[in-house]
Length: 366
Ligand SMILES: Cc1cc2nc3c(=O)[nH]c(=O)nc-3n(C[C@H](O)[C@H](O)[C@H](O)COP(=O)(O)OP(=O)(O)OC[C@H]3O[C@@H](n4cnc5c(N)ncnc54)[C@H](O)[C@@H]3O)c2cc1C
Image: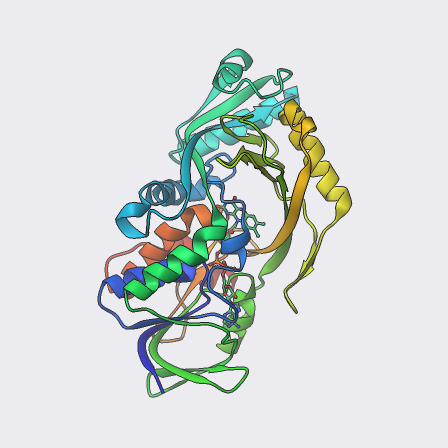
């Protein structure tokens, strides 16, 4: 039976980033996934790296994550498409203008370099936006990553750093004997490790339950829409004041439209199904923000399951009443911050001074 220093349960952006940094520091690490790595939320998300949609308290972490994404050649690979773009968050009504001012102010207080600009200034930055806006919030720290490439690049980087990638291993039991964790799959396969990290995304609650820790993890089935390829249409990453829209155009010409318009789904069998009325609502709002989008056709829609705790803040750090057991997950805009938060958790595991008190799981335990 294999013996690892650290076994990571869940190979999404959080688990994989943690694993990569631990391995770079000389530990023998494995990443266990019930499917393939980075094929859950981390492989199907919209890849937007925006401060406009990030919860204010998480801005300092999102900024660090953004910087890591913009410098992947230093820690991951140049094979993943990352693009820095300017970000505009639009307000169409007086109510939205007020909301935008309030939300931008608090994000600024947490370190986001956001400023409110006039309609004229916004149209100069991106002439494709609807000229009926009242104003916009502007941030240079924005952009996107092609999230569907995450699995490929992380697999390569993890293997290059001698991390064992154990796929199609659905963890169904975890026990501890003499300070060694035994991780057992639903098919009876076993892995031993001195330390474990629970990074199971939307299934976090299920794995924590195996360790007698009960927290509520909500599951949001999120829909995304991608258009056919079009000539260059928009120059920025566009969001709206109420947070119900995010869209950007990739180099290929396709426009990816999201914003949290829910579909149908559950974690029992990772089931997802589209909700057509919400796809239409999302598309209408996108066409309102960028009127020329009306000339485009939808080429594909898909869904992913997003995890959220009861206070919508992440859980990262040590698990209480257990030795050498850690958790990471439920991070709002988690793809943006994931690489940095994985780095922080790996530093904690390596015994470095790391303040993760904001994310302490104890606040949520039932
Ligand atoms: C549609 C959508 C759009 C999004 N858009 C954005 C965006 O634009 N920008 C942004 O910053 N964030 C975005 N997010 C959020 C972001 O994708 C997530 O916060 C992040 O990817 C979560 O990473 P994770 O590693 O915690 O979870 P995941 O990527 O879900 O990884 C968890 C892994 O655990 C594995 N697992 C679960 N149970 C078990 C088990 N029993 N045994 C073994 N393995 C198990 C799963 O197979 C999975 O691979 C979006 C999310 C969705 C769903």
